[in-house]
Length: 260
Image (cartoon, rainbow, N blue to C red; front, side, top):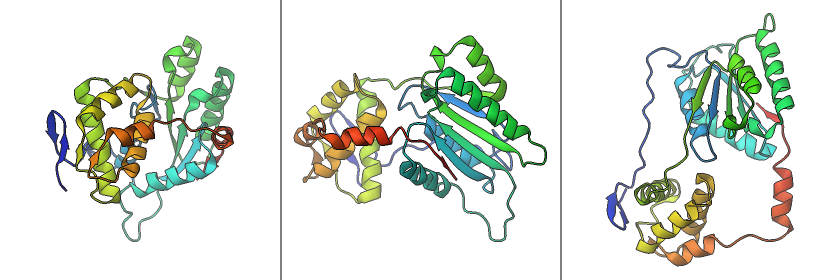
């Protein structure tokens, strides 16, 4: 893959990877219920995905997302399953399930307490195979101490992620990683970035999270007809969407279901 030519720096066209230690047959966090907290776009799902890759490949996955419509949940669950190591021929199921609970901050405190009690009841049901629970939340710091205690009593491993530094170098690297990923998925298309683009993305980053930043870059990527990401494409990608369709999408995103 060709090198991405970015203003002020030269970066590899291949994004960095996080090596997962495999110091045991089921990985370093085997048997732990994880609660991963941090602001939007801080990498919570990426961390959960990495943990799942390190676990026993025979563990069955299910997903309950309190922010995303069922169709998107099914796509995400398929991606999580596909990212795991292939199961050897003739492998026998471990009988263990892993339930991923995303965006639990969407629940009011009382409902979150009820969810914890339901999960605890399921986990302690006699004769039921063990279940691993991995959850993500944005606003852990805003919870009452009582709710924090309830969460810690069930999720025996709390991982707190910080926000994304908005420095110019980090934004430049972020743009490079997103473009490298898009080039890998859709074919070599963008080989460079016009110098003002990084400055504009940095301005957008002051009011947007990483999901929104990536969406802007993706929209610009598919608009760009040349081999360099231009200001015109980025500016057009930032244009607000209007109409009832976006309102309908917002309503649909509130629907919740368990996908397994």
